[in-house]
Image (tube, rainbow, N blue to C red):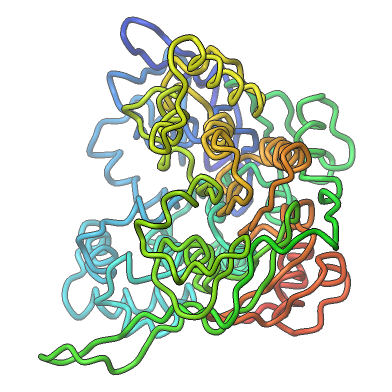
Length: 542
């Protein structure tokens, strides 16, 4: 049998902080042959990314250390290799695609400069040669209008486009091993299908091996030849992909395979009062050019949208990135300017000045996509939950204050003592529960949920969905549920609107749309979410 391309033996990783040692990875072993795909799967904190970063020796030393282990790549041990050899391997023989391209790409440099830097360092290409190779790579990864994107900065590209640029950078030197760390987690289902097909095509073209790190088992089944299942820093099960999916032996693996939002949405009363209604709602952003900055056109982010949301109902809003979902939610909350009519609880919100909206903020709340970014790292959990009550003059004093915070935390399944800790001390799912506790502490009638589960593991997603349905039933909450994950939306939404380029292309009862979509665009979304193979074969438009 041929020698593996990558052979990791008894790898351990420790982190030292304030005299304490955390065992992040404990004596794991795995190998990857040339041209094959191995998936490392597990929930957040299982040690997947730490293991991958160890391969490239990218962990922060001396904070991180390797008490044991060997990492053999192409016949040489990277654990004992000198820095010059590691530099020759990184980005050349082994490349990495990171989870969040907006963080991994330099916001101050153009796309051409960032790809060109790799070509210059490893291949000595400059100017015309580097530009030609950069264009070739961008065309290969399917970036539209690649020649006009060379001067673009990361913030000027969509999430899918930024991920394509990351892949182009990773493939610039045609590596033998590609490490893909959650490469599609933050992407729409349609873009996800395109990126996965792209990786498979490029793997076949270059004959490279792929180490796929993900918590999404749907992706694993489509992409991987073999699987290693990790939890708490250890590999608890390994085997061929189909063997794992059809005959998993370990309870943790079975737990992962079953971890998907299930159940039906909270039943909605069709005769309940209409809590929120919009008519011909528009959010147009002007495009200005010339010395005088005259308006020459508009970006129609939300274009003549009418909808109704009843008390106790969940209205799902789906569509690809850039379709206007979040802009619609912000406009309904009067957090950005808009035209048209917005009626909340019988009141026309366009008659309210910005400051006049403050009393209504108690009734209209929001939960953001990234709980780590939306919670202040400088405030304790108790202060975060109490802040809204203080703004509205509702904060209790003395012992009643602590009891109120405890009640809010227990309402979302957390212990009351959590109020004395800070956001960084919690997992992603726990932080999202804190964000939800902050929202419901004011006893709102309406909550906008903007991708509340997209950054979470599958099992945690299922827990948050169960929590949201439970809170809705107990408090008669109305939800505007924005998401690109149609499996989550199916478990939450009573009614559904499908958006594309600022317009509603289809709307109606969620069950009807999921089982019998009428427009080609909705059919493409459903195909991408529930049948990646069909999406890859061309149902999904690029």
